[in-house]
Length: 199
Length: 280
Image (tube, rainbow over all chains, first blue to last red; front, side):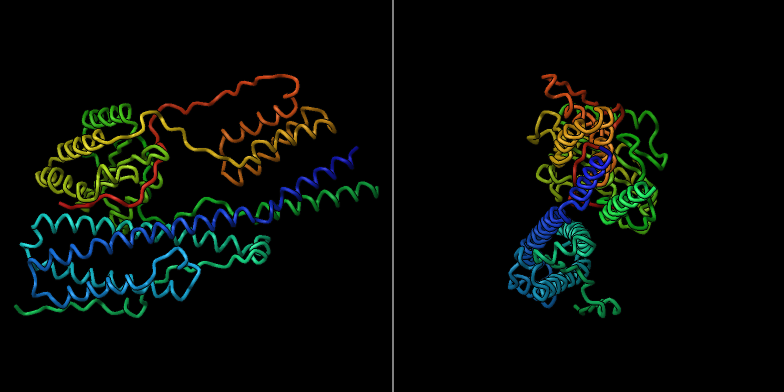
């Protein structure tokens, strides 16, 4: 009688204890990574969509800042050439290129905003202020989406590495997903150069 | 003697394997990193840690916000803190949003107005579900045209009150689900039917009470590991294990639903970082 119980309990523990070796958990976390990546792409796209209007409005008041405006437009085009698809996270090289392009666009935008400071008429234009609000909102959303992606990837990568999930992961071909790196470590050392054009 | 040793050995292997499982399954809760300024507890709809508002003002505001929730279901809260520390107000605000979970789960219709008084910064944090009613541009305008002018004159209550009025007006104009939305709970079916099956099987080997207790214990452990400590879940497991031994005896079984306690709490809404910030 006792032995039966112990055998039965052992069965329960082994059967449920190793809980399908984490297969379900891996699935869940993989989906979480995909979902958070989709959100990141969503917000990056939103930013890219706002830029043409922004350039137009700034041009209306500060056409002489041609160089910065061109930089922003070019950076945006460069981002557009990289196919922003869910598949990016399965291709580390493409992922890195994508991240770099987005980083350059961020830098160009920052330079533009510094320049704008010197044009009070532009700053008080309602169109511009609306666009600025939208861009600031989008930048914040990008930051939040990136953070959540980083957390989802961290969670997923950890899950497929611990035992016994690591076996399941190898069997079904689940590999680590790429993580956001700090964009340009060297550039962080240098303070951004601000050119002052003489009018 | 030998038999006992055998049994002990056996049992200790089971415990060893089981504890292996326990330790290998990481807790799903995320560790929040080193916070310089922690998110304060949600003590009410208006949390003022700067002693700016009088009790009457806090009550009047809270009443307004409570009426909105009764009418539309949406939640707005106001938070006044001295400073956001090393975080920018955006970073701090999203942390508050993730902790307090203002707004209804699934509808995500929450708004948080944060004022960092010493920093002279403020932010309106808008939940996913209200990004249509309160786009970033509008939030910015509320801040710039309604709230900041009052703050610059030192009229904090007036600024907050008028800002809240504007937000409420926007929410009222929005189509939102009317009923209280139940939080979409989907504990794994395993945890619901597992106890039923297990206790049913077990009670043939050992007496009923023991079957129920063991089943509840085992499945509760799984439940806590997967979903964190949740009284509702544990209660459900317990009930389901009773059902396992009684279902063929009685038809119809009433579950007592636990209602949440009084006082204000977040409805489980999520935020995506939408809204606007400003300074005065």
